[in-house]
Length: 123
Image (cartoon, rainbow, N blue to C red; front, side, top):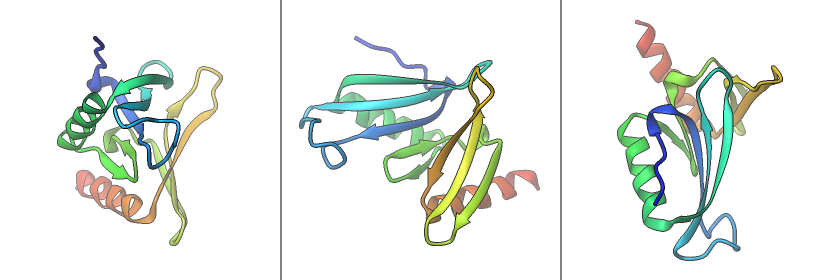
């Protein structure tokens, strides 16, 4: 049994057999970036397929933006910059203990959706 506090998640990368052939039909991987005094990344190995799918659904229901298998919380974004309209953009979600930024890459459509949502929240 496992409990992951989704209220503390800034971003999550869900790995399926399509991305990693070492992952089986029922076994998956989840990388999670947690909010706190510093952004921390945790790798959960051998997550069951249903657990991963439930997490994905919960994150989408909470308003996370999906870029491939990366889910990002728009409220956790500190800084976002488009690299190129074809490539997408970089998003900074916080800083590690050593002061280095935690940057994640979003595909173009997800980056545009993020910017639209963030601009709409400012109004």
